[in-house]
Every structure is written in C-alpha cells, then in structure tokens.
Image (cartoon, rainbow, N blue to C red; front, side):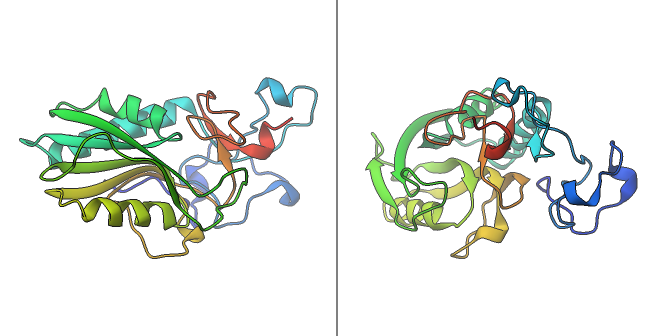
Length: 224
C-alpha cells in the first residue's frame, strides 16, 4: 500500500473545502491528495488570532494510517518475531499506537540520536545519545521513526545496526519529506508524504513542546 502523499497535480473533485484566495494557498506541489486546506488555529495557543491556513493531519487520519501500516507489517512478517527499535523521542507515540495493531510476536528496544539540538533545522551532524539495551544479531529489526527528512539520521542508524548482523533490517516512518533529502534514503513503510515545513504534534516537538497534540500541524500554527 502506498503512502498518502502530496499531489503535484491534484484533482479538484478530491477536495472537501472551498477554494481559498491566492495569497492563502499552498503551492500546487504542497497539497495532500484527498484532503485540502483547513485552519489549524483551534489549539489554545492560537486563540485570539486570525486562523492560519496551515498544513494539518487530523487525529482520525493518523489512527487510520497507522492501522494500515500495521496490517502491512503483519503480512510481511507473518511467522516471524520482530524487534521494534524506536528512535527517541519523537517516535514514542507512533510506536505505541503501531504496536497495538500488530498480531505478530514483537520485542521493543529504544535508541536516541540527535541532529537538531535546539534548532528547527537539522545540523547535519548525527550523534548517538542512547544505544540499544540488547544485541540485534540474528533479529528481524524494524526501525520506527517519526519523520524522514534529510535522511542523515536514518542512514546513520541503519549503518550502525547493519554492522551488528541482524537477520533483516527495515524502516517504518510516519512522515516523509522527500524534498529535504541530503542523502539517498527510502523507507520501507511510509505513513504520509508531507511538505517541507516544520511539523509538531503526535510526538514531534519544537524545543520539547507540542508533543502531546493529538494531531500534526505546522509549528507556526500553534507557537505562542
């Protein structure tokens, strides 16, 4: 099953809302197929301001897509035990929801890396902060990550774990920003392709804030 993605040539019949003034529209290559534009100013941080027309993936859309990803993984790993490796901190909510839809035997471990620090853009330097607690040799490893953008972090993790001789090694990401790649990388399972904007919610943060939002939206739509 393909990821839900932004369509560079959208069909008007797919959209559920009225056309917006030109100055409020996203570029044509930044429109999610089947969705359209919606205000993202319902969060308390936005009260009293003019609603911004910001990108947003609603809670229901996330739940539905996570379940679909789990079904793909169930089929692909039928008869196998899988070691889920969550990348802290951003992937912890995604992993928790994903695992509850898995019907195959699973184990869980976590690692933590840093490439953002206090920035809203990747520094390009990836550092291992927390290593796995258990060996992966002979394991069917599935790396669970919140977002794939430059590809530097996941490339670093994959190289590191591949050297430890797992039986297999794949990746699942909730969000993919292919336009932001600095190195070639393609995840095996992708939830949504998203535009090149800074996103928060559902585990994703800005300066450790907004992880608790049940939806995903642009930082500009919720920051104070």
